[in-house]
Image (cartoon, rainbow, N blue to C red; front, side):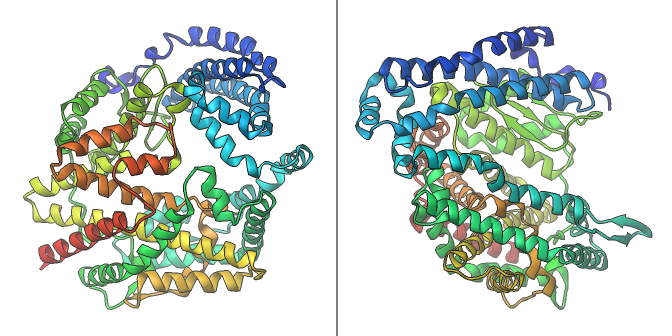
Length: 591
């Protein structure tokens, strides 16, 4: 479908940002002239007046750059073949790189200030918009090294970031992916086709895809292994150089999250692994298999009972599911639709997938490629969760504090999904649809809570071993990974030998200690959704306070204020209890 064929109400309206590309060009010219103004503060940040001016200047410029970048990105994503839009995007990206380089002196200069000077700024009401930023600088001050050492580490930046680039080259270019026969035709395996083929009802196709992908991974496993071991060594080196107790502490400190969150997640998941084993047993029985293999974990247990709703009907279904959030929340969702915050239809050359992006001082925008499927109904709820998180934070926080941490970024979107799913489970009468929804929910737990925690445990073991001097050979890495796979999935699964190499397929392992946030995000969302559905009159208000919090303090503390302390066992007990309850309900419905 061409974009010109779509009804205007299903297209986002970028005129809320800039009336035209010509107006955007004028703003870009002004920004090119004015952004260099940040340099006038270099070397002057010890003075209260100069620092405050610098921070305010950075805010004003930041808001303008954000708007210009968003407009260019959205225009480009409407039609990635549009060379004019691509040129706009390239221009603003160039400006961003230059401004970030010009402003790179700010954090080092602040870090070099005496602690008492920083504390004085923090206590001054004039710096209220920046107090958390300054507290973060103060907290990390002990990890800032001498000027010369910092210069050396900065010069090494390209080298220390190279391992991810090398993995990407191996993973996306060099792996010798084979072709397999599917329906009488040869299909070349790629990361994309592999995911689809694992959902194929023909078990032989799933098996061929599984063995094919790991044959390719195995062909370059020594190269991948050496690169991964070097990446882990880099993580431990930087942690030691900056005087952290471990690479884990360094990574979590960057997001102001205590290591107790990570440790509690792994420990509490370890106590509940039997429920995942029970789910594997149910999956094997429902699929009618004598033995359950790793390539049988992604195929749907039930035929997809698609809701097959038009976008209009799907949107109303989402509104009904989110009704417990109250009229104000629903009114904002209606406004998003009526005022064209959402780009709905799949059109020629439009970017694939879905996302939400806030634009401070305007409103969030949502990109969809809607199809009448159950998955896409949930995608509407998911992306609108992100959108309203951005909206509430922008409305209630100054620019310097409105951006929320990645640690909480998936909470609001998942809360919406959980509320919608529980609503659908209440209203659907079709037994097949109900079973499909329950299996959808269980797989959300399996892939997000259990599997990501398994990854997190592997990362912890690997970094600990390397720090203790253990050589990270391919054999050692594969042996430890296979042991964890057996621990998590249990004896009811045939642990195909190929799965021992799965660690070599995970891009996120090159961003150390990142994946745990998917698991904690789902845990927090399930807890919050349950609080809301409990009917407690304070639950919605508490959740809206979370949505409005932006990044005004530690994301861990923000979640604690919402009633979820992820450094304690309780939230995990509630989340795993939800998994166990859903499993029992599916067992009853499947009898």
